[in-house]
Image (cartoon, rainbow, N blue to C red):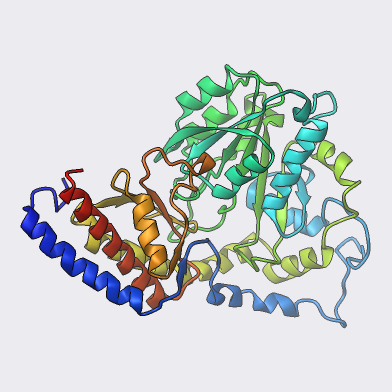
Length: 427
């Protein structure tokens, strides 16, 4: 029971007047703060600035096999880049395509290929099969949901718990409806909840028996190396799919967008050799190869997986403090009074906050009016429809520590105001 449930109306009105006065003072100060998107801060970007010095007009611009990285060719990426990512994602080099800077772009391309050409040479294009549906564990990544909306794909939300998606619900949907062609997953430090899929959930996904033979899991492993405190292991879905006889059922995606430079990283698609061959058969009409100089730059900077993990420890030192700030302020200002719930994640880029039923939009609206950019309430659900109107996604990484502290104190102030107003209304 929250702190305001047993207070008298006089007590509540007195507290509300004081809090509203505090809110108006802050609002009139003209702040402009941003906790809306999972962007790296300047200090994180500075960690990779040495990468700019790995290539010069005097250095060799050839890959290990002698290929001149300034030229056309190698549609699936240079060998040393594939070697680096094969170790990071626990897949074979033959199961990787190195793309441009955007894993979201590679997801979009994979979906477009499925719609126009099907997922294999003997599969009918999704675009010729009538309504196409995707399973969407929620709360989830808003850009996945926007992509589905853009392409006219119907989304079916399923719940999440501390182990990952509700697999009973997933199994029932996927195995009974041939129009369900895919499923979104952010398996490690899930956006926004921070959940890491348990081994049992990974194996359950791999063992699915979809009604649609052309069903694909879109496995967006965006935070594969983004541990904050200690290494958290994730079971390999591709390996488990192979064991279950479903080798072709998964597309895995990742990138260095939050490892090196957010606008100039490297993205990958990892999948079975059959899926990779099919993708390349259509990619050859789209490109003659991604930026191989950028691939070479990354390999020379990181050198190997140990180099990547050492680099990510530096990231953790920068942003770990930010996650601590959020957790400490939430605990003190809304946690002790039981006005909200959240889990401090062990990695990733977000904190998922659940406020009182029916109050997230009002809280977020007050934040916006006070000059604080925060992800709109509801966007972590398909079609922007949070059925409880309670989930708020916090992105603590981009802003400075002092500004973050101020934003979080204001968020807690808004939660308290809305909670008192609801208590006065008898909600």
